[in-house]
Amino acid sequence: MTEKEIEIYYNTVLDIVSLAGKVVNAGFSAAKRIETKASAADLVTEFDQRVEEILIKHLQEKFPTHKFIGEESSSAGVQTVFGDDPTWIIDPIDGTTNFVHGFPFVAISIALAINKQVVIGVIYNPVLDLLYTAIHGKGAYRNGRPIKSSGQTDLALSQVAGEYGSSREPEVLTAKCQNLRVIIEKVHSIRAIGSAAMNLCLVAEGSCDAYFEYGIHIWDYAAGDLIAREAGAYTCDPSGGPLNLLHRCILCTATKKLAEQISPLLTHVNFPDD
Ligand code: LIP
Image (cartoon, rainbow, N blue to C red; front, side, top):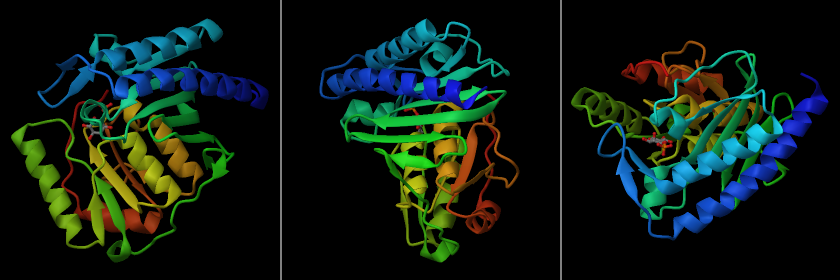
């Protein structure tokens, strides 16, 4: 893939995301039909579905040979196939529960992977008008300005993002509460804003020093992983091994040193791969 081609993909996706952002914004304050998916706390609205359709339709028109992985297509039964072909990985509204409750941390998250490596990451929060972008090897940006992770190496001085997620399985909740309980003793603070994509952007821009979560999906963290790494942050599997986009978990830290302090404290939770 040439730099020129990547640039074309990037400029195209930015135009399409801006269009989709208008639909998210209109839906944010509108009445919506709310349904549940895997659990009573796993929500979806007609806007999630509509935004995903818009994104896929426009990208498909421009790049007919490209493949797609989308949250709502997957919920509708489309198999997740993560191969070597150029693949757009789409979460139309990351933070759907926030969207339902009018809590402004919602984002369209789109990654383009080629040979299973993410080369473009775009996360757009149209409510707060925050656009985070990265192209592999070219740094990370917020509304066009370069961003950098905090460089924090000391857990005791850290602000950490962690989430409860939407599973209500007792063992999962026990492990997640235990993890937050163990971490809070050792840090300045914990934040839970309800969007994996936004959490990764917070680490990328340095307002959180770390974020970890189990049970998320490839569309929640593919774009944010690239944006965070391009901003100088470190990402890995919470167990300490290399990050796997299909393993449904991530530990993202300002520095590797911080990951080495957090990983041994965590009770690891296994979810079936995407
Ligand atoms: C959400 C994630 C969030 C997690 C929620 C949910 P969705 O994604 O971004 O981090 O805690 O349970 O998975 O479903 O709003 O796209």
